[in-house]
Length: 438
Ligand SMILES: O=C(O)[C@H]1O[C@H](OP(=O)(O)OP(=O)(O)OC[C@H]2O[C@@H](n3ccc(=O)[nH]c3=O)[C@H](O)[C@@H]2O)[C@H](O)[C@@H](O)[C@@H]1O
Image (cartoon, rainbow, N blue to C red; front, side, top):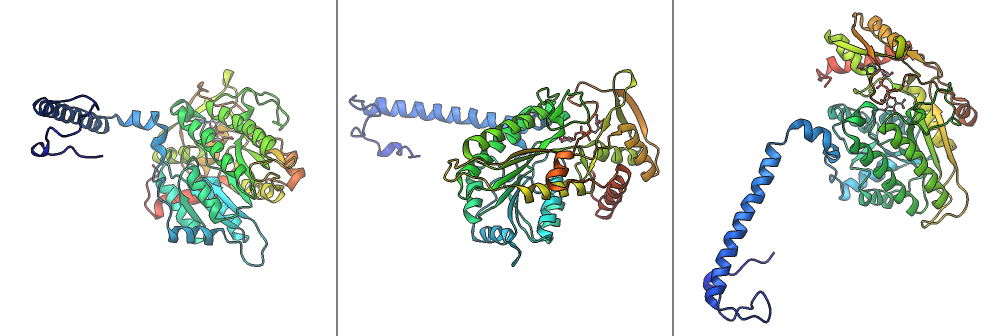
């Protein structure tokens, strides 16, 4: 912005601010003085308001209402060293002929496990994650360190940043995208609904927009959710069952994601596979999930709320162990066909699939608590209460025959075995490093 001249240097020949109108020097100076004072006053008011809004904003409102609050350090990318790290991480192990995968949400629970598994078998992997603070970001940083040690680089950025996504595709010819970045959690959707729109809708569309334009287009495998079955009562849930009655905004955004996937497949020839995960649990899991925060509360002697259905009905979940989910993700990636479009144009029909990835063995939440009590050797303080109207559904149960047929998906870990591994990790992680469990 140009600065006003100092008063002493102003003369009658100065060009008036409104062309064509003469202003005397006196009036000009008077106006200049007056407007300078006005500008100063308004600037003070403006900066004062910014100061007040920053320092007196209530922590709860900033945490719950602003979806962008979760985006931390999204501009931390670029430069020759960064580009080299991206390229190195994406490199397929020589002689392997494997895939090169962009994993979104790579510092998340499922993202970390699948990225590590891909790298182990020789595929190239580049992660992207915005490290938001929906749950303890130090856990995400620990997962990042774990991946770093196995040679996976996680780019810090948001999937809504299309410039960043385009840059990544400029640097690497990704054959596949495993899209796991999302705002997860059923109940939090009532607290911060716009964060679901930001990540699960806008973020997904941004990613698809970039994928449809690049050449060659990658095949995309992405995380939907068992919650899309919503109020469906026909069990076990089959991919053919209705999914038009979501019980939470979270479920609605995942269902919308499935319809958006259909559109991008139809118009642009993108190969798209949606995975309906059923309550995934295990080591390095998500602290917002019941098995995780129940463990923490039980160990601290704090009470836990256990939901039950009407007339003391059982609330149950088809809890699925992380290793089984990893196998399902790898199977989906391995059987994903190539996208058919190029230059943003469809050249022929492309693959469009949706799979249930569950355990086919629902367990009541009361049994989950019983197993945790046994493993932790501590009696839980239980508050049994009616399932609140918070987006939770009473029951989930996956029919997995489609995934079995397509890529031999066969879960092998029962809840007790899986929780044993989780508890072992939990005790080790939170005691060894003296980390706080949030
Ligand atoms: O299957 C899925 O698609 C979903 O699985 C989980 O959602 P949810 O099954 O509700 O998992 P939790 O939040 O861990 O709840 C597990 C069970 O514990 C119950 N619960 C939860 C919280 C609580 O305080 N008490 C309680 O009894 C819930 O009603 C539910 O039956 C994940 O949080 C979602 O991100 C995921 O999409």
